[in-house]
Length: 140
Image (cartoon, rainbow, N blue to C red; front, side, top):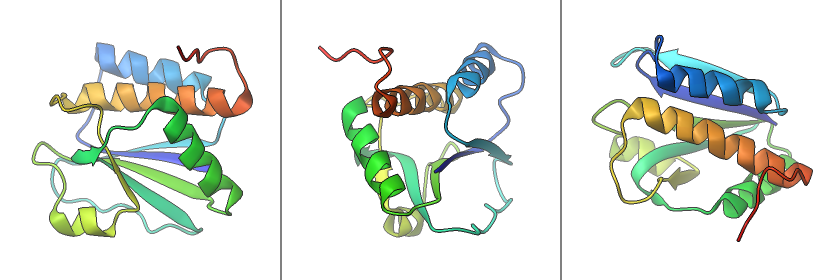
């Protein structure tokens, strides 16, 4: 299953970009990163069955194991792509939330968008590592 991270805004050269690149190299599943302008721009239409996950303050606070379970169910259920959408500074519209398959948050705190991108990449690496039985993930 393709993991497709779609983000508003350019990450440019930054410590966050280095973290994103580090996890991009480590994730063994197919991965695509798409950057859209802060406003405008359109997410390309999918060519295959897919799910949409919004990173949103109103989302569920999932454990790494729970995220891995969801990805596994979708992958094994025939989904070909899972889109993780990080919105602009104002977040997502109610319409976007209603259309999404899942809303997730990284706790109750507000995080900078560039840091959320790096945190998401780490969680995708961790979830795929869990599914592969890799020792990277250690739950306590």
